[in-house]
Amino acid sequence: MITKKDVIEKATELGFKDIGFTTADPFNSQKDILEERREGYNKPISLLDLEGGIDPKLALPDAQSIIVLIEEYFQESFPPSMEPHFGRCYLDDDRITKDGLYLRVKALRSYLRENGIDSKVPFNLPHRLSAARAGLGSFGKNNFFYSRKLAAQSSWTLPIAIVVNEEFEPDGETIEVGCPDWCKNVCIVACPTRAIKGPNKLDPRRCISFLTYYAREITPLEWREPMGLWVFGCDRCQDVCPRNIPARARALQPNPRVAAKAEKFELTRLLHMDVDYFQTHIWPHMFYI
Image: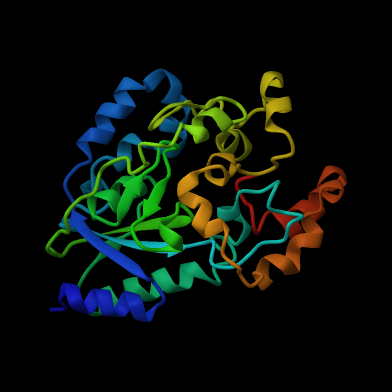
């Protein structure tokens, strides 16, 4: 049977630069939060089946551990024509094209399967909380997860939680808000639609990211002007965060995959696009729209 060390070595070989382990115990604190905020979270709870993600055993009945991988999605720069209008985490999204991150996660799951371990990657598991429970970083007041060592310890990371039916020794949890005392809540103040109601409190009904990729109806009139020119997602609370300054100051090489499609995402083209243009050029990369 493979060891924790073996899994870490394989994940590192596949390009994952940080990995942690936690138990498959239910996320009871998440249950309490969803119940407490049910009025504001009612729509996301039903759309994303958030309650179904509280217990990992609903995804894998004999679950014993959760392996959490951390992917840095801001390793390369993005076209200036796209950054002010699209959340960076969606600019190189391969969940439809399946030619990037998907292949690496699949390779790790194949490795586990070859060694007698079943796995699931539940979309509705609280991934950021899984990462904090696995000791991989802390939270920001803006609700994002900040890596302990990747992307200059910033929030430009994506936790990937893999539920497995093998017991691995859990790492020490770091479930805490890691913002410095001198920070004056700039993320809360800067939120265009005042969606961030306080440290670790968010009203998704106002959040531009939720409005642009989960809402099923036309954006309410009152939020359209505050949204500005955000088309898909929003990075405002991350852009102003002092903890993200070192990451944003790095000199990065351009992301060729994103640069190649930048022309197709020019705003006037999107404004006048027909169904064929949308299905051919936009949907494969931003399928939530």
